[in-house]
Image 1 (cartoon, rainbow, N blue to C red):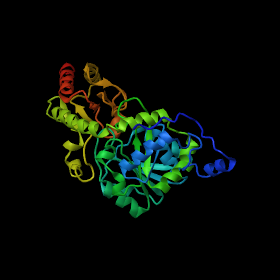
Image 2 (cartoon, rainbow, N blue to C red; image 1 turned 30 degrees about the vertical axis):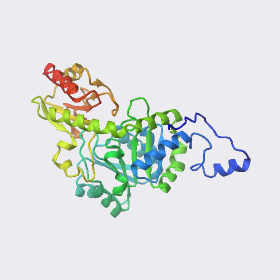
Image 3 (spheres, rainbow, N blue to C red; image 1 turned 90 degrees about the vertical axis):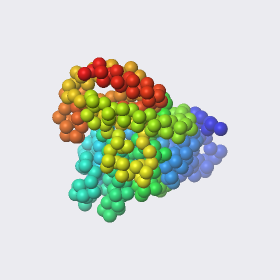
Length: 365
């Protein structure tokens, strides 16, 4: 019932010719676990089916997936257009790619005309998130796909927030889907993994042109852990959705909270709920009614059930704030307030979490 953990680095063959044949098609054969491994392949088959994709390649982290996807699709002289708020390390990698002759721009306001205005003749790729990082604004996937196709560009989306259960971008025309499997899909904060999903030939190209060369292989034990996490994904996501929305609504009515950034509470995003976005996860943010770094720290330090840490998507609740005391200008450039707090609502129970937030809000003001 559980896939075996094939803990091996290589696979011996019966003859030299059999090895030669396998090496000529490493995408379809087990030769060396930096390429393919049966335990990893079991996870890849399941993720591909969940996303309704032809093929999936799992990697050692979400950033390994991003790196392989960008290196495998871009060349010197290409331009990338990032739409919506994007995960910081992804943009950090894009900045590094400038030294190899690859340029990029970012459109924070994902209106169609503003996206079209930023396209260049050499735009090869539109990369986006929906909902976006930190502020969780949604964009119309079908609209972006239409814009990209008219321009002759590929589309790539980070679908980690929604998971394949709440959003299926490939069915809406997106070329490649990226996941940090570390988050909801693995779901237990005990594995780091990533995935790329799309048409078989495109994933095969990335396998040879980037994945094998960058070396971001996922180990069989981590693949087994991620596969185990997927077994409870539907149950966990439904509870994350219910409890996350309960906590968000509580904060939206609290006098010490200015705004809540949650797709279900945003009028623009509500237009896409039920059509492109089929549900909401437990990750959202809110703005404290303060610009004071000391009060922000007092709030965070007063939390008990919410632990302070990076990442998200596990069964435990987490809180983090992007304001570090000296980066107010940088946040303003991204339209992010200094009082912003991101919450990952876990499975401790919404009332316990609401009580924890209420105590911290009282103490910090």
